[in-house]
Image (cartoon, rainbow, N blue to C red; front, side, top):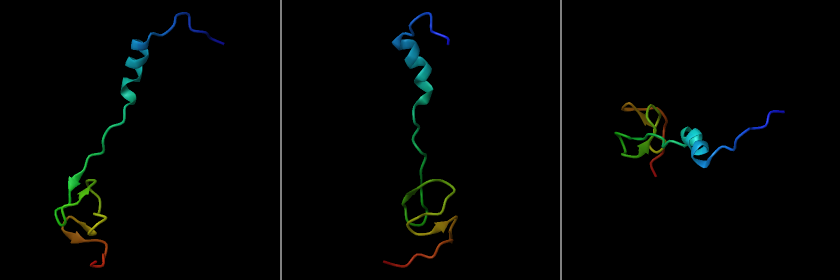
Length: 60
């Protein structure tokens, strides 16, 4: 089994893991109700997508 010859420093370890950070999900505003939604998806609040009602939602 291979054993590292030298210890990896904290800086080198952290530089290697710098790409593992989570990124924030992009959101856009629903043109119908103004709710923050993910792009290219039906709005879960009002059911509209690209100006058309895709999912019937009851008025509350």
